[in-house]
Image 1 (cartoon, rainbow, N blue to C red):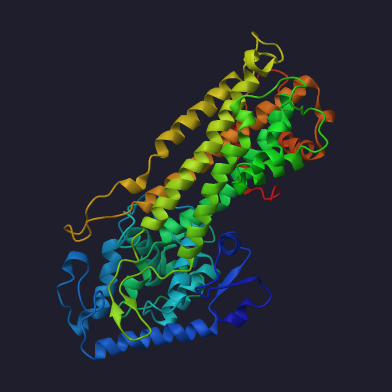
Image 2: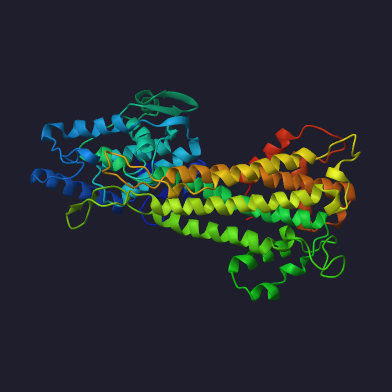
Length: 506
């Protein structure tokens, strides 16, 4: 697909420099196509010419005319160079487990194309163009979620993407999983025959961990905002003391994220008749309410750090060897996922803490000794259990998050006959981060439902702030207040999924 074929559509240019998570999200959501700017086409062609010159000059270049990993000392005859690249994809497409969701596959493809567009990988323009066309025609390779150790690149998952370019593997097209060649054919595309270095260029990078990471980070932003809103609803349900959110107070400990949280919550609570000040009903609240700026703010600090690292990684060349503009081809370690592994482990902890403190606020809502409300927010306690076991579900999810939050990056296991003797496990960290984020959204949903029920029992809807009342209406569209016991599992999950995709709180 030429760039002219994108007229009338929103287009994200893959220039290798300016990609960010919002642009990736547009591609992931299918509301934007991608294109390769002409300047990058020139860079890609120049990079390819440098590889061709190395071959014609009889140079020995890793992954071009040598084996891979521990086999790098084996020289490959010139007539077998193309076969070497195809063999690499076939040998490395060994992922296992459930397929990655389509949004993550689209993110992976976009990030890989952007890295190749920088012009340091030696790939041919037509091969890169096919990857771009697959994104734009929505040909989505089937990529098993497990099998990467996060160094030497995300070899297994990226091989499942790359092998479709040669007409092998499997891909989803228009809702149907097909052999790779058939998926390309139905989309009006033709497979390529790989040449020197191209297989390695396609799979040696961090785009699986980074792709999962970008999608997870966008969901984490929505989760964090929902956590702030849930806390507002709980404060109104329990007559929370807003004095602890005072801007002058917070200024003496000037972490900016503390004030960002407090300012946002002060704005959302403006006009509320349910909020109290110090001394009106009590001097101070429990930590799960009084320390919201400090705890939520720290999670936003983790979020901001991860966003910085992912922005760098999205616009990096992460394969090996690197084709430098000087003409040299140098082997290095840019495929190693440690920067992302540590970042995603940090995001795991930050997201888990949004859930940890939320579950404690839920306990304050359902526990009559702490709330002064009907036990477990039941209309007829004793005959009814109310939301007793909804809190159990939140507690279970919080406990599961604590296990998942164990850092994947502190683990390593040697591969390739100990040639690759330290790996990052960054892809595991990214997958765990997303799982924690989804679990945490369910915990936040439980808090919102409990706060909604408490407000219902208090008949306090007209006393809420305009902003929180408007959000409460959406919560109740999904999960109306209980007038007696009923199963709410499906509604809890629906509200959690709403949290993960709703952008109205931004």
